[in-house]
Length: 257
Image (cartoon, rainbow, N blue to C red; front, top):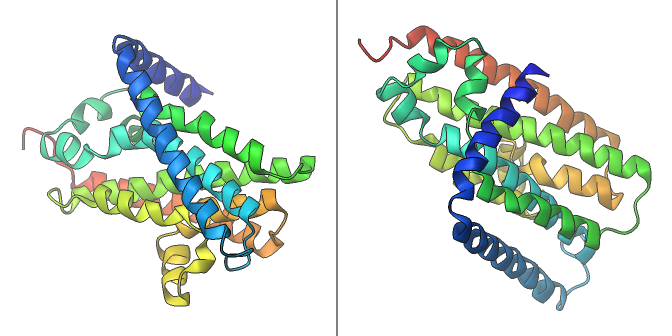
C-alpha cells in the first residue's frame, strides 16, 4: 500500500505539470486515436480476405489489439519515462545517488517515480476496444483476463528493469530502445511467428506472452498450460530483475567516483 501511495503521488505531481500544456493532451489523444484506428483498419482489411488468421478470428484479433493498447499505455505512462533515460541520468550522471538516499526501494524509485500522464490516454482506448469487440464473456473470463493483464504488466516492468540494469555493466549501451522495438511484436498473435522466433519471444524475451495470453483468456480459447506459463514467467521475470538489479548495485560507485 505504501508503494501504491508513492505511485499515486508521483503520478499526481506529473499530472499537475502536464495540465499546464492542455493543447498537448488534445494533440496526443488525436495521435493515439489515429494510430489505433489505423491498426484496426489494417486488421479489417486482412479479414476481408479471410475468416481466420492462424486460428484467430477477427473478434479475437481486435481483443488482442485492445489488450496491447492497454498494456502499451501502462508502459508508456509509468515505465518508459523512468527507464528510458536510466543509463544516462541514473548511472553515467550519477542520478541514482538521490534514489539510494531516499527511504523507499530503489527499484521502485528508479522505474516508477515519475510518469507521463498524456500517454495514459492509451489505457482507456484499449479498454474501449476490448469492451466493444469481445463477445459477452463470463465473469470468470473477465477475472482471468484481469489477472493475466496484471501478470503481463509485471513481466513488462521486469524485462524493462533487466535491460535498464545492464547499464551497470555497459552504461553506454541503450537497450531500452531495443526493448521498445521488440515490444511491438506483442501487437500480433504469437502464432504468426515461426517456431524458433516464437520460442525466443516466449521463453527468452517473453513479449509474445504479454498480450496474446490475456486476449485468448477473454476470447475463451486459452488452456490451463498457457495460464501457468504466463503466471510463472511473470514471477521468474520479477525474481531475475531483482537479482540483476542487486548485482548491478554492487558495481555502482556513485557520481563522485
